[in-house]
Length: 530
Image (cartoon, rainbow, N blue to C red):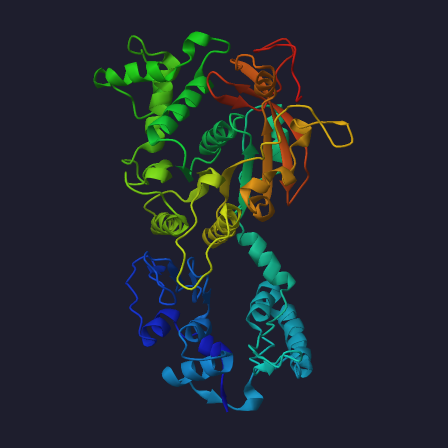
C-alpha cells in the first residue's frame, strides 16, 4: 500500500504550512508573503502561490511543492517520508501498488495504452480533448531513495514526469504575452524593433560608459512604451537620481518630442523648470494632454513644455479609473530612509502585481532598474557564506533579479556600466599593434564589472556616444545639440545582432531612431563610431 503522489501533491500548500506549525497571514489577493521559517528572516521573503501550490523564498532560495516544504521543515528526510507524512497528516486514502502511476522501470504498457487512448480521443473530441489528456497524464511515480555508487551517500530520489508534448507547447505559446518593442521613432528604430523584443520573464541590459546615455536611453524607451502600450503601467526605479531629477528629465524629453524642429528656444533647463514651478499656482494644467497643445500658455512657459507638463500629469494621475501609468521610485532613498535591497524589491513587485490582479491598476508592462552596479544584495541569511567580493554580490543580484522576472512574468530592464577599457582611446597591445577601444570594442566580455548580468540577460544593448568619446580623448568641450548615438545589439537570444545609428539631442535628452544627417548637429562632419 502507498499514498498516491498526485493526490498528496494536491493538498493545499497553505494548509500544509499551517499543519507544520507556521503562521500564514491571510491574503485577499491569493498569493501570500510571509517571513521564511527556514532561515532567520527579518523581512517577509517567502512567497506562497496557492493557485500553483508552490512556494519560494528569495532569501535562502528554498522552494517547491508541499513535499519540499515538509522536507525543509525537517519533518521528513526524503521524498518518500514526506509523502507518508502528508498522507497520514491529511488522512489520504492509500492505494494498492498496482494502482500507482508507472515508474521509469515498468511504464511501457501504460505508455502504449495511453497512446491508444489519445488516438481515440483525438478522433472523437479533437485536439483540445487530447491536450487535456496529455497534460493530465503522469507516467512517473516516486522512486525510493538510492545510494550513490561512488560515495555510498544516500541521495534524494526524483521523478521524470510526462514529456513536454506538442499540445503543452502550443498552449504555453498561446498564453505567452507579446514582447515589448523599444518603439524609438524613425527608420533605424523600426529596424531595431524588427530584430528584437523584450520578452516577459527575461532580463534586458542597456549598457554603456558613464555619460554615454544609458539612463537617457532607458527614459526614452520608457516614454516610447507608455505611448505604444496605453493599457500598461511601468515602474522606473533609480538607485542614482532623486525622483525630482528623474521627473525633470522625463518632462524635458516629453517637451522635446513636442518641440518645433531645430528651435533652441523651446528647450527647458533645470533652472527654467524651477521658475515655472514657482509660478505654478497661477497655472491650470488640463487633465488631457491633447487639449493643452492649442491652449494659450502662461508667460515664460514654452508651449511644448506646457504640453509636456499636461502629459506628465496624465501619466502620473492617481485619480484615473486605474491610477497612474508610470511610477518613478527613488530606490536609494525609499520612504526617505532606506535603500531597497532585493528582498524589498520582491515585496514591492509582489504588491504591485497583486494590485494588477485585483484590477485596481493597469497591468505592469515592464520594470526599469537604473543601474545594476548600484543594486544592493539581500541581507545574508544565517548559515550562508558571506560574499567574497562585490563581483560575487553582483552575481547573486543578477541571479535573483532573473528569478523575480520569471516569477512575475514581466520584462526587467536594467542599466549597466561597461568596463573602463572601453574608452575610445587608441592604445598599443603587447605586440605593438594599435587596438581599438571604442565602439568596435564594445562587446559582452567588456561587461564583467556587472557580475553575471550579461550571461543571465536575454537581451543586451550597448551604447556609444562618439562625440563625447572624442571630447574626452582630446580634452575639448563636451558636445551639445544633436549627436550620433551608436546602438549595438550585443546579445539577442531570440534573434540577430546588429549595429544602428540613432540621433541623441544632448541638450534635451531626446533620442530618435533616425540617423544624423552629415553636416548637421554639433561637431558636424565627424559622424561615426571612432
